[in-house]
Length: 260
Image (cartoon, rainbow, N blue to C red; front, side, top):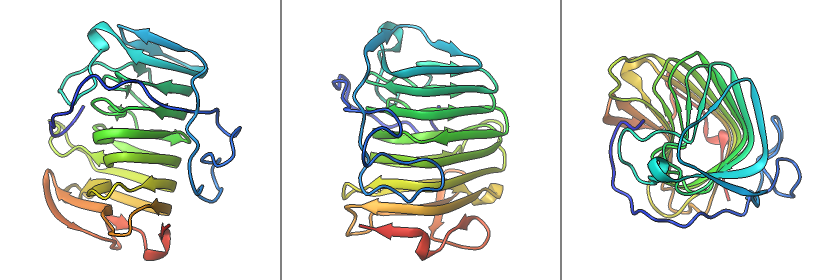
């Protein structure tokens, strides 16, 4: 789900040269490692279209297979109300999968979930939406071509994003600004590789009027000599009210951000 609708051109070709986690030099590494200097995007191990949402419970490992939307899931823009490619039941883990184009509304987590080594070659409405539960973990993987947001946090709780690469995006994480039921939310970013494009982008957008908290550690930003990437954007719901670190809502220091 999105908190703001923006237009996007349709009909992008599925892209992505992606490789399995930990097998390629330069890949975003496992938790605790230093940020990579450049992410290696994998090659799909097969590709499959789907016209209906795939339900996931327990742990599902797709071995780097790529899925893309067809029929009712063929949307790749910012239209509200699109269905996801995958819907995770509470407690589910989805791993080693690529979402190609069209990407529809990516992944929905109905409760606590883990996304491990999941790659989005061309983000549709959003890459993933966190709707219920208390803890959501994104470990490894990457996303690119997000005309708006990568991760949308609508439910309560904490989103942990680690060892992740992002390119060609507007906002990596957004705490919902206009959901009918609002919550205090937290997000933790660790070992994130960001490639700038020269346009304004935000790593996190949080609602300070809801006492949201973002903690940023080990952020590496490439190709951003003009400093267009904003580490932490503060909002009162949907109204921007400031940027930059503080001791309450945007918890990071200059040493947590490395420019290359």
